[in-house]
Length: 219
Ligand code: 5RP
Image 1 (tube, rainbow, N blue to C red):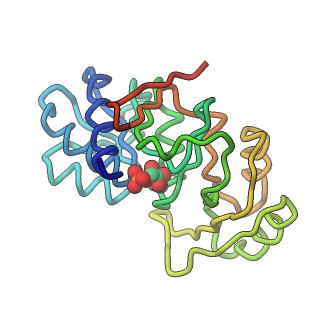
Image 2 (cartoon, rainbow, N blue to C red):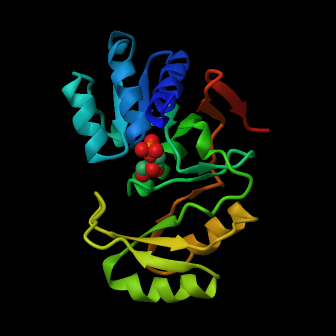
């Protein structure tokens, strides 16, 4: 099976967590499969809160109502992909640049189900460059501070987030303490948020694999 087929397998397995109400929906190619599966049970849900303009467009194409988080309060379920997960279900996200809205919807949700192909499971986070969303005027300042933290930030040139900000992708990190690093980076002036999801990691990780979808749970 190719990587996309494994992503699709994980996305389909996440449908079992959809029990109705309003669903939080992430961003990326794995989530695109999930949205397509969600469309097959759309009569069961009241709509979705989306984490990006791209997911909003796909949800609407399927006739799924997209609701404002401010209007719906907390959500029972959030489904999203990841660029890396460790065995504690701390994640690196933001390869698609939607990390800030993803973090907001994840924070508003009781259960975060992460879907990925099995290549995303790692022992130590950091081989995938850590995305950091920054206010444009702080780009150089934040980059210098990230160097002090041991990383090599690379500006994702030509890319603007849905929030009008920039992304620095930080290479060369070996993240032994994800929660501490998440807090440290988020505290730098000019940082909107970083792509570490450790303080609010996933509760369930569904991995597409040759042997079928397998599920890991936090704790
Ligand atoms: C977007 C994300 C995605 O969840 C992450 O990049 C994984 O993407 P894909 O499902 O395409 O592998 O965090 O900001």
